[in-house]
Length: 133
Length: 133
DNA sequence: CGTTACATTTACGTTAACGTCAAGCACTCT
DNA sequence: AGAGTGCTTGACGTTAACGTAAATGTAACG
Image (cartoon, rainbow over all chains, first blue to last red; front, side, top):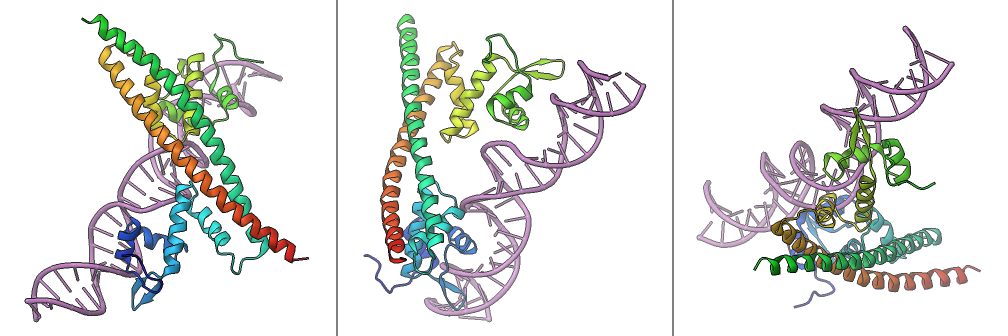
């Protein structure tokens, strides 16, 4: 049961489809990350809105702030964005990528250190327990 | 000009040495992450305090919350000579380690995805620039 | 002794990304 | 008509990790 090209979703359907709350969707709209159409007063999310939301959620997984994401969306949306804007977004991505790599490397080091630490603690525990017999 | 074993630092010296504000150091103390000795009312940071601060800052770089760090510090400080305490710290460390590995893996995935994305954007930029001649 | 330069505690302010009511339309079913 | 459900817009609450300001203390300098 996949979503058709033309089908539009209610806010609740969006919540179910993307595991976000209605508050979140309205919040993103207030922040101008989304702009669903209206049927009377109700929001209707088109295919484009769904694509944007997916990009937003992916951006969040990358650790971008919503403000960063708003700017990055211009990168995906290369319609109507001038070259300077696009270049800036590209740089933003490069910076973030470098940060992520650095963080990953530090994390790897920390993992190793913690493993060593735990090895020691584990051995200490084992000998304590052995002595307790 | 390195710091000797016995030398103790004022709060201002700590700020300069570790690039943190005095507010931060007092905040960490309030959160029981640090406990400098006093000379009258003034704080004096010993070598141990400096070691703890380094661990705190490293933890932060890894993206841990101060509360997480407080618990991790107890593990590095395996002074809790009683077995139950030690075992609890050990388990805590194991959990943390698992979290860190999961985080590292997610980060690796995100890095790859972002790299792909940037490759596309970079190519788009290049062709825009080529067309601009 | 006064001033300058830091130090202290206390307490309210800030930002991000939502959560959590509250009050009120608009339908639909009965 | 009444009840129920879902949606709407406010608007205040929350958490983390400090920032910032006010009022006060204290040590050294000249």
